[in-house]
Image (spheres, one colour):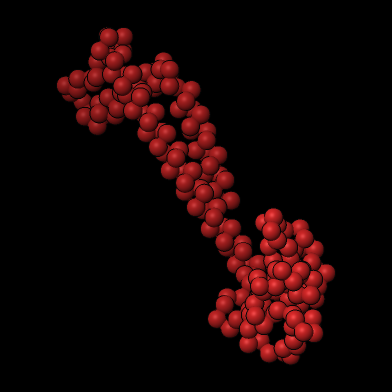
Length: 192
C-alpha cells in the first residue's frame, strides 16, 4: 500500500500504473510496462504488452478506448449524475442528525433501564409488604363529612409520602437517583 501511494504521488495524475504478481506471490506495481520482467507480460492487458520485436510499448495516443489496469491514486472525476461534495451546512446538518439519533438511542436505553429497575423495585416492595414490614399505615383516610375534595387530596398526599418512604428504604434508591441524574444530563446534552 505504501509503495502504491509513493508511486501514485510521484507520477502525474494521468499516468498509468501496472500490476503483476511474481512467482512468490508478491504483488508489484510499476509505472511502466517496460519495468515488468518478460515472463510476467502475460498478466498485462494485450494493449499494454511490450512489442517483443522492438521491446517498446505501442503508443495509443490520447484515445481512452481501453481502461488501464490501474490509474494513479486520485479521486475519480465527478460525473454529471453524481452528487457534489457536501457543503459545510450539509455536514453540520448531518452531524445534528447523528446527534439526534444518538440521543434517541440513549434515551431508549435509559428508559429500558428505568423500566427494569421499576420492575425489580415493585417485586421487592411487594415482598416487603407481604412480610408486614411496610404498609402498617392505612391506605386511605375515611372521609365521613366535610370537604370531599380535601379528603381525596390528603389520601393522595399520604400515599405519595408512604411510597417515598418505601423507596428511600429500598436497595434501589441510589440507582433511581443515578438514573434521574443521567436523564437530566442527557436532556441537557440533547437540547444543545
